[in-house]
Amino acid sequence: MSGAVVTLSGGVGGAKLVLGMSYVVAGRELVVACNTGDDFTHLGLRVCPDIDSVLYALSGLSDQTRGWGRKDESWTFMSAMKDLQGPEWFNVGDGDLAMHVLRTDMLAQNKTMAEVTGNLALRMGIEADILPMSDDPVATIVHTDAGDLAFQHYFVREQCGPRVAGFSFDGTENAKPQSQIVDTLQSDPEAIIIAPSNPYVSVDPILQLKGMKAALKNAGAPIVAVSPIIGGKAIKGPAAKMMQELGKDVSVLGIAAHYQDLIDGLVIDVQDAELAPQIREMGIKTHLMQTIMTDLSGRIELAKATLNFAQECRT
Ligand code: FO1
Image 1 (cartoon, protein in one colour):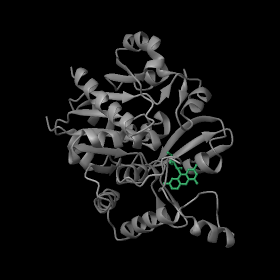
Image 2 (cartoon, protein in one colour):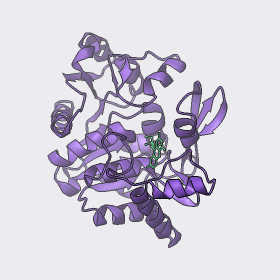
Image 3 (cartoon, rainbow, N blue to C red):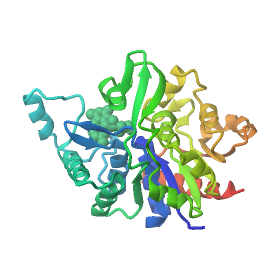
Image 4 (tube, helix red, strand yellow):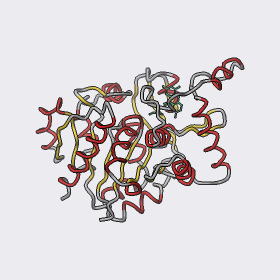
């Protein structure tokens, strides 16, 4: 067993668990596959929100309140943008801007997204392997009653208001799972963790990549998900609203059903204890614990318990 722990992560919830993981799994044994379906080019800059949430979290730079971007941020760039009547719907802080400029410049030098991300992680003192789910571009499209929306238009410009009917992932037919992720999966990893991220727009873009599900299933490692739904609600973001609009069971049962063909175990909050037997009937083992991560120790506790539970799920 290589001892590597592969974590699929997207959004704020994903970054929180990954931070906890970084205290439990030594440095380079932690391999994070980040969703890049949220990525888009804004004012010529390549913006990768779910990669940056992980980079900022692991380097101690993240703004815990906002959940995205950097702490102690200043907004001169945005006020100048307003003066010049430029787009204001997507807020880019002055420090965050440096990340987007540097990344765009590196990509222009024909570096792959993985090389750029690894380079930035190194400069930020991060030891874990932070990887894009693919080096090829994939764009999540949200199909809503207001039309087909690019992800950031749905999430930020429309504030997750429109009713969702479904999702598609442009580019997924040609996008390959990032090679280092595949190599790690083929080297007998210790565990595969699906972070408490939005199953539709943070995890599915990763799982839909050609060959990714097979690579996960053939890794010979337990696959454990942490539910992003607690007591029928999402801690942050539109996951519960999406489940309701899609006619799914807005509960840990809906999450279990979503991952049923993939996961060995599901970590759920103690609030949902009465649903555990039904999840076990679906052939999924359950682990009950306090899953709301309010502080660093909570994140570390959840990471520790999830990894222990994964070992219990090892068939
Ligand atoms: N989310 C917002 O709700 N409003 C914003 O103005 C905003 C700007 C932004 C800039 C950089 C970045 O990396 C993330 C940003 N986000 C913003 C969050 C982003 O839309 C989400 O974090 C992910 O795409 C979904 O998790």
